[in-house]
Length: 552
Image (cartoon, rainbow, N blue to C red):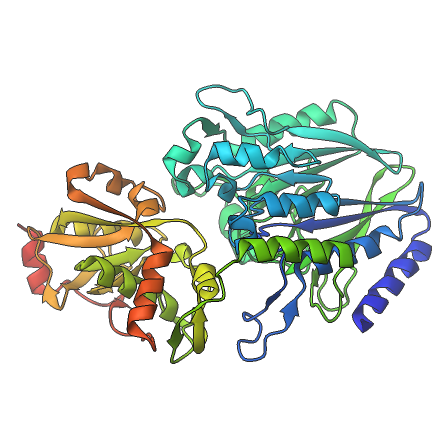
């Protein structure tokens, strides 16, 4: 409560301090992933996690900020940069309807479309978005084979606030094409972000707007300054062939006319905005799962109607306000509504299915971590495969020591992927691994193998040692490999998996989440280890036995 009082005083004080400026409070969220419920912040302290208040606490903060608005001199906006529902049970189980209900209640102004919006298919997404009482924005999602925007988005809107004309443009990462099931996006195309957003910036600028704001489901690099230096310090340097679409930093630098960009997608928040050195576009980005509300007070000079600066509401957190429940008591109406929706969605979630003898965390070495190894062992065990693998981003949470509930496993595997078994020869198996360590790719979560990687070697020739089931890899041997249907569809850069004939695929029609549940139930108390299954050694030569097999 003390922090809330301090922030309230700061808001009031800033009204007097900048009396000559117009003040626009912009509150922003991104990557909520259904995190409107209250939950323990184990990522902060696994042993004594503080409770995050979810949508109820967010509503308390948002209403507090709005209470300081004053006609003609101070106003506010509430926006979201996408990935709004898929993750927490209250979002996933309701197909996003619960989150839209909450967003309607707290009166969001705009939301952009994220890549995970398509996880349940376009038809379900459209039905959910029909419930929204605010505009859904994206300027680059079009009907397949056309340049016509899909009918459930608007490319932009122009609004009036404080006597200012403000253009708001939405943008979705083109990487959605590589991160979604092809069948879920079969009726849409994602046009190149840079060209599309520049097109619509020009359109709104032609309508004499005073400010241009982009809400983009794309993020800043984890380390913005080194990334910027690598990209732009030597304009003459030949650029690598682009594998992924543009990110928020590139849009801010290469698109003219954007004043402010609100991003997401990366699940990393920044207490201060990234300001592009050339365009001076400000880029803001929050953390994920409803753990915080972003808030920046934009100061606008009355006469010129241009940005004169910005203020952060929190002393230590900058523009990001962490929603600790004991500091932001939940708004009664919204908190109670979320709780009811949560209880409906989570029937059976707290059933105990096993026990962990240790904290099975994301801590690890290289591409290995404890929870990733456990999941891959479960996949291998269920299918009887020689080798099991997952993409690095497919496992989302940890399991702590003690009783394990279905809810815990849901947090680890919130997506409805299914397990599959493929049968391929050793050459193909090796190509899978080589693909995932080519370029700057980091690798895979695995079980059943021991591999050594030398990243100083050329692409597709980086494996220097490879054992399958403890035996030397053989180029012509047929191996059984367990993975997810998400990867089988060619996602995460594994387009080669789409070449596997259907006769060599076993589809179990079993959810990967339930495979993990079964493994925990049958093997409790469960644990995990970091071992020698994956090692990087940039001085390692190719072992003679591997080289001999490669020459076959």
